[in-house]
Length: 248
Length: 233
Image (tube, rainbow over all chains, first blue to last red; front, side, top):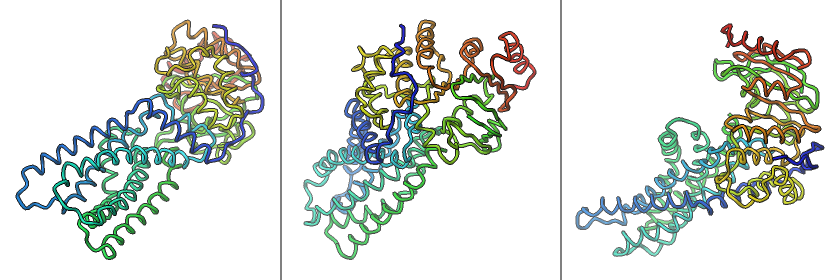
């Protein structure tokens, strides 16, 4: 080959006008979505894993005694399903960036590091939301069809939304910290579960109240408010720390 | 490029210690040294991927510590890792980089660079289907997408077959016009041929910095063997 020494390769003033943060965010997010659309790696692995967790739940609950009220524990089961599935997805969320050193390619661009965090957290949120949209109706179908949830069942949407946002936000920060470590799968879980415990506790409480139809004002709202407050604080901390974490 | 007392420590271990030199614009600096000498660490510090622990550096008129984004907009890095996304096509990879840098008329720029690296015919193919040489050519196009004034090369010949080396030589020659280069290499002959300046490191310390005209290749290799052989490295 004789490479063409064209004007394209002659150095002049760098041919850039720095794009807006929003434009860079969109570019990074579109890349993640395009990649997932092409490979379906995260959605497939998270979806299959979620189904397997449902099968395990089925086996575990099959021997439950008569009179056992599954509605009492359904909030906890839903969140166990979401946490296990999200851990798998978060562990894979930087696999494309690692494969050929692409994250360094992004870090060489003049851009606010927190934009990388925001775009990755958004793509993780979208992927987890898609898996939830598919698997939670299956959860209902397998475990709750013979039951009579309360009229406030629709309010489970609140903790599901707040919890999913928190899980993907904090999880994205932790996945960045652990991506280059040995035994990253275990390390992510070891960091993730204690750190998100208050969020999981609050979301499980709010979900259970919504399913059982308990005291909305006295239990659901405070739990949801705690989860939302936790989200705000932790997402802000993640946003602020991301530059340090990704450049360390 | 003006470097003074540049030091990078990882915990108590100093990967770079008190490195300093002045490199004129348009120069081609080749960095040599045995494994663990600190070559790649120096390159990563100069390309803003690592923060220095001490020392100062002005690159293209910008301070490394306080103006890293101003430097990033003017540099490109070609590594033995392609920094490409294997599941995206050649065109998508370059388009992604062009939009991140805010290159005006990104589609035209991508088409220009694909033609330069002779990959236009494969522009719609995923990078995963490319040979090592083709991937390296595309990674060069990615590094040049924003027309950088300074190009860092981190062992760019690593893993290439002789034909791909020839292609890369031609390509580097074609992009030298008006640019400065800093290259890390284990290949003494290739690095010496391309360079205008030589930097030798051992155990993170600078043992030689000079213009190539001050050295001939025999002297240089003798010096290199002394550095490696005397147990410094």
